[in-house]
Length: 300
Image (cartoon, helix red, strand yellow):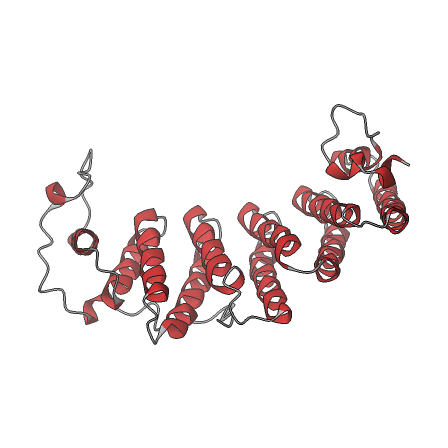
């Protein structure tokens, strides 16, 4: 399945009006028929309550069809943090995949567009970012059937770029940085080491550009720490200890120089001090958390 991300589309299809579908065969009931029943009934507007009753009727029926997807879109317009609606959308996509429906590619296109549009409107929505991560991981990356190494790498880069759009608006958006971190770590598991190393190095260059703008951006420092950690871990997997030693030494020298240069800009920057302390801490330091320190190349 080709990755079908759309960074900023209008996604008219994925946001189609739920009322274009026929629900007359359902018996929506009332809030008392919901399972489990609500502890307290919220005084929703009639249209919102109608959407919820239809959604729960479809859940009871275990129907994961196009009209179910449509009603979840309506539910999410009413409440963008409706985790039940997101969960049902995942069930719809999973069933479509498992039953080999002919329009799965179109469904995925619409879902990527749907999440792209919603992230623009609600860039700090926990449920939304979790849904997007599941979507990309399940259908674009982990599903490697017929996918080349280049395709997999492009899927990872697409998700990094997707998060970048949110970071441009808010360079300390925790959700966007977590999204980048997840797929950067994913690269270590699904790509050959050379390709993964290039992604780690690209992330280091990315964080350097952001730190040029704001040297106190803790999110960028944390992301850089992860990229360097992954780069070191990649080196320690080498069976050639001489080659591993050279890679670790070069990276250590480069990162130490990078951090020292940042200290010259702002000697009181706590983020830089934490970063450089972690780099040079001895391997037997009980506070050391980074796995490369136990490797013979680092110990030397």
